View 1: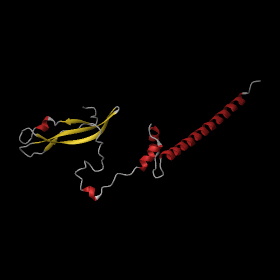
View 2 (view 1 turned 90 degrees about the vertical axis):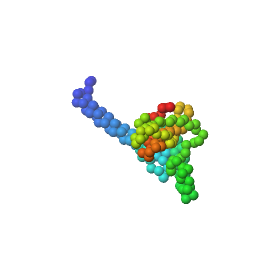
View 3 (view 1 turned 90 degrees about the horizontal axis):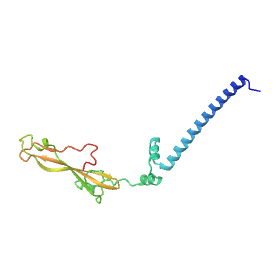
Length: 180
């Protein structure tokens, strides 16, 4: 005996209700599991003194080499030493307050940027300007499996005959790596 049409419709309606309830239950379970994962990541990576946002946790999740030991060690690291009155007298020795020197054992690759032809001629008297020095900056750079310090020296020129000012070579553009 075949089921009546009204019985089939009712069973389909019951199935839809049942599946809707199951879908809602699955959504709630996923939400609860995501919250448990978030709390576990906070417990694992976030010391009590720090508050990590969801975005920070997501970044940590994507970072392949970050371990909880590294995060804890970084949070326990001593701050940079504050300048005392005795170190304030040595201000000429430091390149920039708050920046650390790059390791001296790393090889240096120098790149000299020359002034433009217009900057090499004095606007006041028309004579060639003389190189009087360089503005120097250092940044840590890397080639695959080789670290080095990239030293950029930009010429500074001034006229010996008149005091019309100093001109310097333009700074390299933002993506100036591998220009040597």
